[in-house]
Length: 257
Image 1: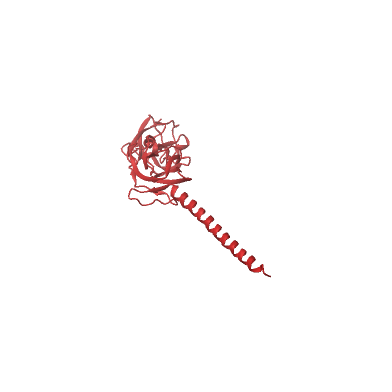
Image 2: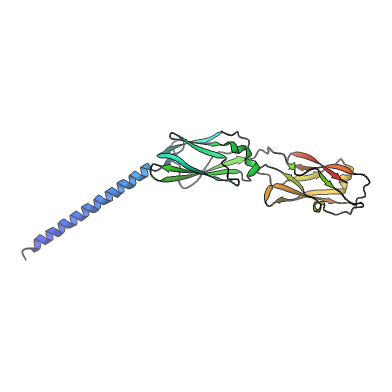
């Protein structure tokens, strides 16, 4: 009976020691977490505004004729050790924009591949993911660069001039694309349709009609035309006239034999 108060006092000491230990452990974990946060990559705009790690950044629109090497934007990086990798979001898997780390500056610029962007790509924006190695951990930044199409390419006919050898007399309402495809290619990224027409000044062109058929499902920059006879033909001599594919006017020869 005399020892009971001693045990009770001992239990209270154990509880106090346990609480102190738990508080000490919590303090260590908090300090480590806080230290990790301060050493992870922090990205900022030039005005010191913090860049979210949740959403991509969207840059100001540029034209499709901008020169390679043009600086698009410079960001500020804290606790960034290096740029580990850059992943392009493109059909050709080319880097049309790049990022370099110079001190605390992250410089994003156009590469030499940008001159060929419209040759290979179909979207009116470029996308990359920049992967950073931080003092502690890693971080990714998605960058979107919108592009304004300046219509800087003329349509070009493929495999022209087109030659059709037709037996005479030849019937009306016959589609000549069964004998050979008429194809015009336009590199402009916003161009989804071409207007085809015939030379209105040639007397024989009235016996034909041409219209847009479709885009190539495997290459939307290629556009097919449908050429049909609207009258029966009974030509004695070979004849030549122009067909046109227009966004801007581009002409090529068509030969009927």
